[in-house]
Image (tube, rainbow over the protein chains, first blue to last red):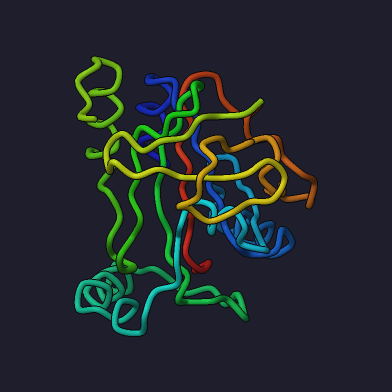
Length: 135
Length: 65
């Protein structure tokens, strides 16, 4: 994502990353990762709920696709940081919003590995810009 | 500022109410983004509506790792 920020900038897309962690934990997280995006906290998970992001089941969290992703990340050298008390069952998601309030793209993850690819997001944005997105 | 929110791609709708955030489906079709209880790293409330000019991509994380 970090390397692709220019592609979002070129499309006038601002990116905001939302976590349900407390702001104090997010500070530590941001010091480690240095994401070039707005980092926001929703510790009460009211916004997660508003966007209908539910908690996953055990079988979803440890699905074959998720285990494959974890294995790939660990083999790639990812080091796990400890952020005690985090809820591993909370799902994530991705939403593109325009100034008129339309959610132009919505993806609610069904397991930890279920995220739209960057190219999928960019294609969706381009389709919207061309007015060819499907209703 | 209030936003009419609908999902074009998934033919779903996110519903919300004025001050309290509620899970869809409901019967209210606006979501007041500026009132969403989002905090910045200094634990200050953030008006989401002021964060972008054209498009805003919201990435909801799972747990931190």
